[in-house]
Image (cartoon, rainbow, N blue to C red; front, side):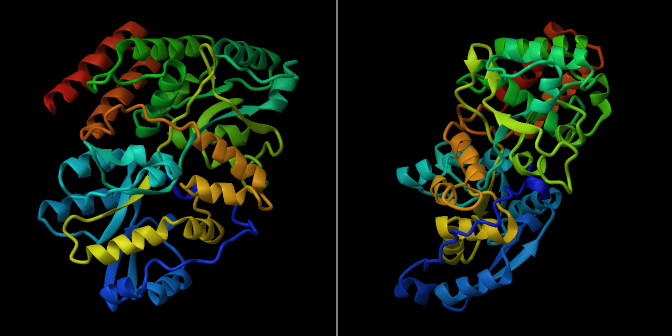
Length: 419
């Protein structure tokens, strides 16, 4: 889930391209005087002047219905179950793609190979063999490391392996720079699951098997690592009852030295209005068991078109415009939306904040998905089992082996029941 804080911080880029038209005169005529509704969270709502320009180019009037992320899913489910469009276009979180797609609530899309290559996170919005939504904002996972705390511990290089990371964090802890250097949520909520998926995938290259079941070896390895870090005092045991976002914020509040966290911290850690550690935190390649992880994961958001929309052509035209390279660059300047297109980020590398764009572009190049068959339709149930088990592990109620056994049995029961 992406919250309002996600902005890339590239908004002051000077290299904003002029918006191009979305179609020829015939296309404009076909959708002239049509009105569509677009349901998105506040962070996804384009400025009215951009919507006015789109109307001038396409003939389509867009009415934006700003809806909280939490309310969107229930509204989509309620309306779609009655075969009615909740809106012509609406927010689709990565975690909803399997459920919405398998239920037939989304119009199928046909992005060509070039489009999929330019937007790597398309892979998160595949339901079965069909693409069902177009990514409009990225939430890549980065490794954040406090180099100032490392210097206090006599560390002058960044860790490249999981073993080096552990030793660095122990040294940082023993130096007194910070009490709990590894920031990892343990409460029963979604951020605990996504943190687990990130750690497991970057350590082992797999989380789920080809048949969709949980890979027990990867789960056991990850749970054993978490228990070891808890026993060594690298992770705060109180995280079992601390909100995940507050654990994440520890990287900019100076209460942690290492975080596998969202894109937003690439800039917020160096924002004097938000951070207590300006100039101290950097992104590093994610350390893995055998060296730097060759991939990262993402938890993006997309726009989908209702299968029950009466204005599908106009809706398609809007999504094409909204997710185009030119519009993504302009939206980044206007509302801080992080682009999903590599071409848009490449263009931004030429601007004033080119280094930030380069960092994100390089991470996007190695993005992969822990779901070999796309996000499962019962992901919400699966996630609930995962974060509940991790929470019990954090409380000392389960050993790593017991946690792995329990997690595997419960997740696989859900997977097998849905086949």
